[in-house]
Length: 431
Image 1 (cartoon, helix red, strand yellow):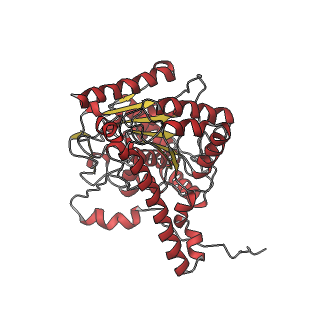
Image 2: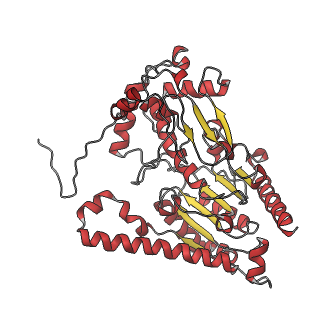
């Protein structure tokens, strides 16, 4: 029978092969530079944009950061205070046990992290589930006694829904978008006010101004969502983000039709061979379409796939996040771990693409903090999977150089690292 269509049905034409649009640029230019602030991981861009270009003609340059290493602390948090594992896969993360353990971790950390604490959740659906549980058990109130908690609202992000936008009248769309922007602005304004006035939590007998100057204000906590309005383009400098915590891994909805087609095309196009790649010569095998990029932890919710742009070039490419520099060439002199990673990418390029989307969203969220050379913050990656070298290697170099794993995955060791970091900053500021 012929297909039936509802009033909400839509038909989209998407170019799955970006190389066709980029071919003229590559053929006519002597050199191509791709520059951006958050481009890592960028391996699949070289494969998709320059498929016919030998790898010896590709170079990658990644900038470091303007802040000294001592101003950044990145710690994985694989376990909570009671020793329960943090494994926020789609199937496990709604368990009351894991949400309660997350609450205990945040409560403990909020006691030692000064000023602003920004916590990113993988989706609005999960953020709402955590909020309901914390409010029901009193965890939200206990955290709020130390740091008032402000929650990013899903309705503030509704204008990103393409289908809804198409069905609304233009006047209604303008009114709603204006309202969404106002709501987001109101949340940020209140968050900033609490932190700058040093009025968060219980009164400790000190003036807000004094607390603010010493970097000891109790501050507030902002509960955001990766891919939401507060995860991109917002400047959480200084006390607005002394800590950025990422809960879980924000994988895109693996059942999204467009994403499924993209992954299927990547597997068909790149599984059997990778142009001029030493890893392919070493035996990168082929995959059929059934072996696509569904990994443990893929998000079954309907949400926008994390996007971004990546970097590579005909002769030079880059990631221009900051000022100081450190370079890494994509060549046959790669380390053993890099060779293994390249080999895996060729064996399962669809999975790698899917994972890259996730990690680029993580890196985008992390980048909301540390906005100038005198800034400092800690980054907490709350999930067992961040302990994997395969995952941690996709973090920006300036984070990876300061990335620490707690001994035995113990929360206590991670907690001590955070305490030590902020104690040193208090000592420096008091001098």
